Amino acid sequence: MGTKAIYPGTFDPITKGHIDLAERAGAQFEEVVVAIAASPSKQPMFSLEERLDMASIALQHIGNVTITGFQGLLIDCVRKADAQVVLRGLRAVSDFEYEFQLAAMNRRLDPTIETMFLTPSEKYTFLSASMVKEIATHGGDVSQFLHPEINERLMNRLSV
Ligand code: ADP
Image (cartoon, rainbow, N blue to C red; front, side, top):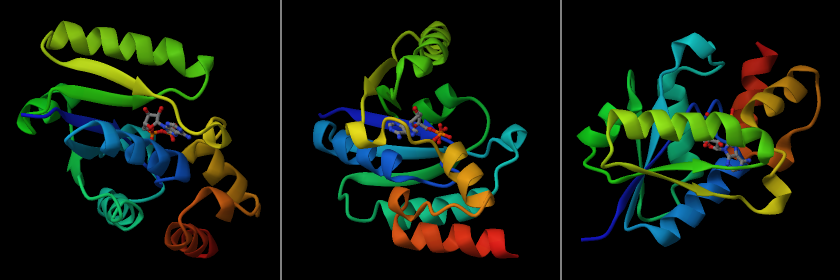
């Protein structure tokens, strides 16, 4: 049986960096589950339902990628999905410290689950959903960083 990976995050909204990582993961694992955290403490711009919907649009071209939402502990979501791997993206050294801590903590909570990292295409190493929102809020054009449909939804959200 092949390996099933969970790719967790807030995806508020899903960017081309996330898509790039999901495509790479899809090529390496038998199955990839993009797990979108409710993350109420981060006060997301889009509701969990909206983020799930946007991810399914942006990732529909990848055959072995499915999408789910979760609340609470990541490790519980991994167990429930019967996955073996937590997949995270590493963009720059600045991601490392937090990711290292998270991986170590998750290993403490469940030593049978491995965390693995992928790096995106270099053109996305500077890209984060939070920066996209920041730029868009100030009227900047972020269309090159987003799937066209996601860009439209972001523009609609900011124009209300
Ligand atoms: P962010 O707001 O930083 O985009 P998320 O919580 O949605 O955050 O990120 C989920 C996962 O996707 C994390 O592992 C993060 O490192 C990764 N990720 C986010 N943006 C990119 C990118 N541009 N390239 C590679 N991985 C990314």
